[in-house]
Picture 1 (cartoon, helix red, strand yellow):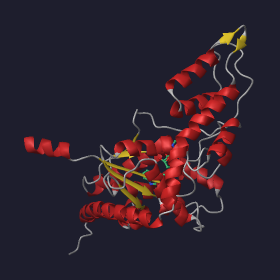
Picture 2 (picture 1 turned 90 degrees about the horizontal axis):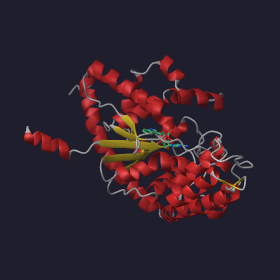
Picture 3 (picture 1 turned 30 degrees about the vertical axis):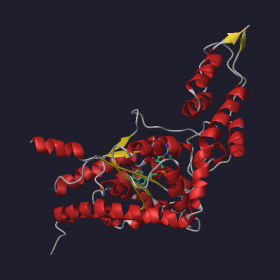
Picture 4 (picture 1 turned 120 degrees about the vertical axis):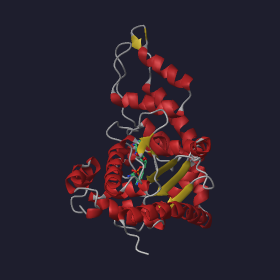
Length: 346
Ligand code: TYM
C-alpha cells in the first residue's frame, strides 16, 4: 500500500495543449495558454503541439503552412518552453491521433457537433467551405488530448466547450469499452480561464481577424506603440469613481499583465479621483505607459523567436525529438484502446 502511494506521488499528471498554425501568435495565445505551459513544464509531464491538421479545416491553402509551423515552434520556445523538458511536436507527425479520432467519431453525434459555438462561428465566416473536418473539429481535439490520457489542458476561455465535449467522448468510450480514458479539464493557474479582448474592445484578439487591434508576439516596438495609441478611449470620466467602460477596463487589464503594480495603481487612482472638479486621468499618458511596458514585454520574445527561426535544422531536430516522445505515449494509449474495442487480432 505504502509503495503504491509513493509510486502515485512520483507519476506526474499529464498535460497537453495545442495551437493552430493559422497566423502569428498574439497576447491572447500567450496569456490564455502559453504562460501556463511554461509554468507547468516543471511540475507535470507535458505535451505541447502545433495543430496543423486542425488548420486545414479553415485554411486549405497550405502555401504558408510550413513557415507558420516553424514560427509557432520557435515562438513557443521563445516564450520559455524547454524542448528537453516537454514534448514539443507537430500533430501530423503523430498519426496515432488520427486513428483515435476515427474511433471517437463514433462517440460524437451530428446534432451536438452542429450546436458547437466555434462550428456555428466558422459556418458564418466561411459558408462556402462547411467541410466535415470543420464539423468534427472537437473530435480531433479530443483525440489530441486523450491520446496521451492528459488530465490538465491549459487553454483560454474560448476552448471551454471543446473540453466539455472531450470529456463526453471519453465518458462514452469508457462506458462502452471500459475505463481507459481519464477525463480532461481546462486549466489556468489562478482558476478562471482567460479571454484577452482586442484593443477596440470588440471581440477577442485573434490570429487572423482584426489584426490592427491585436498585439502579436512578432510586432516591433513601433507597431506596438501605434496600435496602442490608436486604441479606443473617450473624453474621460466626468466624476470620481465613475463606472469604467469596457474598452478602458481592457486597457487596465492589459496594463495589469505587463506593467508594475505601482503603475497600475497610479492610473487606477487617477481614474477614480478628481482635482478641482476635473478628472485626473489622461488616457494619452495611460496609453503611452502601456505602449512602453508592452514593447518591453514583447521585445525579448520577438528577438528570441526571430533568432530561432534562422536555424531551421535545430527546429526540425526539436520537432523530431518531440514527435518521438509523443509517439511513444500515443502508441501506449492506442494499444489499450484497440484491445478494449477488440481490435487486437494477433
Ligand atoms: P488556438 O490556436 O486558437 O489558440 C491557442 C491557445 O490560445 C488561446 N487563445 C486565447 N486565450 C485568451 N484570449 C484570447 N484572445 C485567445 N485567443 C486564443 C486558446 O484558448 C488556446 O488555448 N482548438 C485549439 C487548438 C487545439 C487544442 C487541441 C488545444 C487543437 N487541439 C487540444 C488544446 C488541446 C485552438 O484553436 O487554439
